[in-house]
Amino acid sequence: MLFDTNKIIVQELPSLGNEHTKVSTLRTDLIHPIVSGNKWFKLRFYLEEAKRLKCNTLASFGGAYSNHIVAIAAACKLNGLASVGFIRGESCNSPTLMEAEALGMQLHFISRDAYKYKEVVMGEFANKGWFWINEGGYGINGALGAASILLVKDCSAFTHIICAAGTGTMLAGLVMGANENQSVLGISVLKNNFGLNEMVNVLLPPEKSNAFTTIHDYHFGGYAKYPTKLIEYMNQLYSREQLPTDIVYTSKLFYATEDLIQQQYFNQPANLLIIHSGGLQGNRSLEPGRLIF
Image (cartoon, rainbow, N blue to C red; front, side):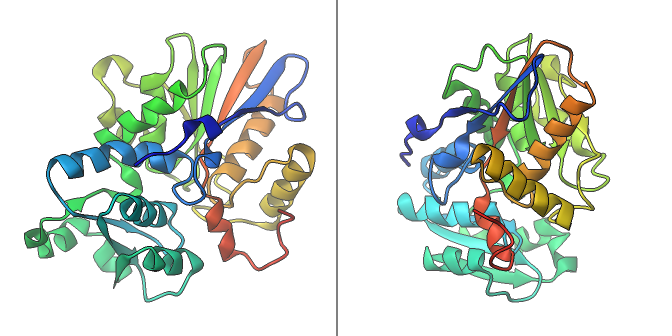
């Protein structure tokens, strides 16, 4: 699976910072139109392991607008593998799932109650010999892949590495990849996701345990919630910096960072690197015209 990491750039964001705080973003969203942002990094070692084990099918879980699901579908097609997605909720013809299906993914819709017991679902298909990937790519291989995000450009000058956090897989990887003098901050996009720290620590070596901070004040009502205030911010940010964001992860991430700067949260002087993790395809759930990009 070959992707050109040279497409990734560090984009300075002068309108977010001030005389004491410099802000940039690592545009991992530019790496590929479908396997976008952190998805390729989190999948890369799972794909290698699946090939090593001679598995010809990858299976995973996700929602109707899951970046993870469509990324697996595209990655498998590019690597000559089959893919299966177990989708939370009733049958849905979302643009995301239609694209995943067009890429060859076999979709199975399961009830929200059944979705809570993924190990049962996996057991029902155990004889298939599929290679299973946890929702969101959560796991050691996902974190190790995410650790390589900080290798695509020289990130040594930044004082803080900041990312959005769902499962915490990328956050764990960034903790692994960061220098000892860099602070790593995760902005949780889920409401009351107070088990996040534990999920991250499970993936970290003991010496890196709790070498990060999580903030839970910028979920905007919960996962995939996008009040008018957030949509307005996304449009304003694009007008200022020509930077597209998504409604689930990166919009909340950039809003949080800008708000924290205004609150003088960061020690000064500070040089912040925000990880743009892609996921822009999720904006297709919005009615046309709400975003200016």
